[in-house]
Length: 289
Image 1 (cartoon, rainbow, N blue to C red):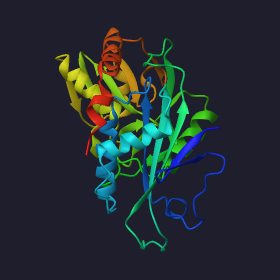
Image 2: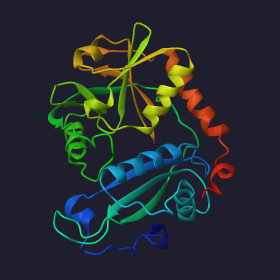
Image 3: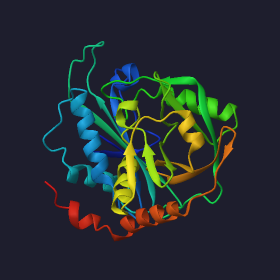
Image 4: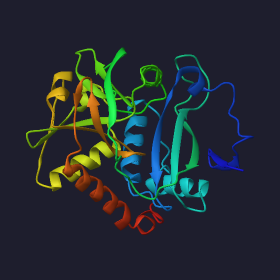
């Protein structure tokens, strides 16, 4: 029977419960992170931790002194003691009651781990089909880059994507710029240069987005963070999306334009896997204070 970690206590997922007076339920007052574990290793945990803590501070939570990177690592490892490949979700919400004005700024957390089959990122052999959302417009605000519990735009985008029989749906902001995919950041390659929407577009500050930017720059290629319009995607030589679970996925069709997979994507994907394989996670975080 699967276990979850509720505020540091391991309990059965079937019997776990939270109080009815819950600000996550009432107001979506919190954040979450989705982290991938490879054979028990979480090579990109520090990126997730930094984004989580920055988001909590921005939302005016009081972050406990013992909520260190090492603490998060240990609590996740307790949730998946056998190691293995997992999709891990860390949900954090503000404790206590109150109406819009909270009675407490202290966080509470839930950690869940779902088993995955693969121990590495696999680039999709067949490209995916995409278009622009007809119903969802992303709002741009100071916390757009954080993964808040208010995920209504992405829920509606997922419903629209299914109705239109698409693999990916790109979301625009109020300026009609492409901000991101339904659950992924977007990159294009045009005339030998990579482009991705900057964070002011309203996109999530994706962990894999940040790592892929590092990899592209380390390869000596140009990477420009800039607003993108749908016409930029149609004119691109290659489009791909990134997230923490799937890694890279290349786009075969956007609207009426078709693309082929560029060989450089295989190089980027291989470097992602190299980072997974070479990371000495336990030695770095077991004793983090």
